Image (cartoon, rainbow, N blue to C red; front, top):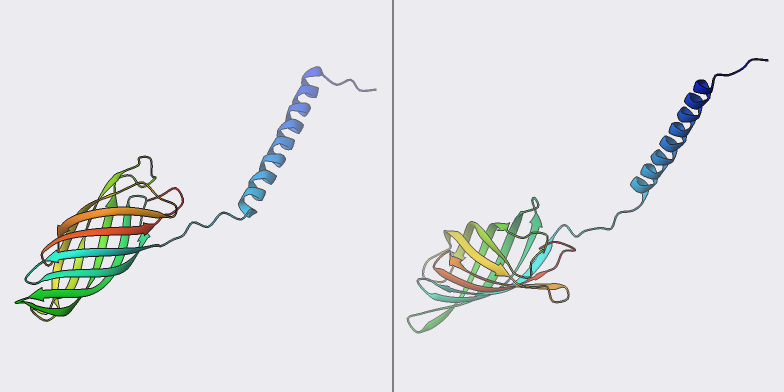
Length: 174
């Protein structure tokens, strides 16, 4: 009969324990990877009302959509239509803006969060044909109310701009 060394028994036991732990850990990782992840919406719709003090005073109602480009950056597109007033007459007006928004608090750690946005727009206010304008705004988003995050912005783009925005919330993000 062969006698085993106590050291050999400990080594064999340790290897068996390590193998079992590795198997259990690998099975857990595979199961976690196979489990469906909750879907986070990849786009954020918005509704907005804006006043632009330009060659002709203009009021717009619009809709937009933005998508996260990174944790802090959103890419957005806004289309709006409304009315412009100049020389005592009212005319149809509209605009389209392509914007990049930098969000200071993307994970909603605070109730209020500032942001800055900039881009290029095309605006029609009956004072000229469509014209291209640079757009720059600063804004602040408020606390979420249900599935809506309100925001207020001021800036420039075809004239001085003031806007009120309602965006859909994204789980855990702005």
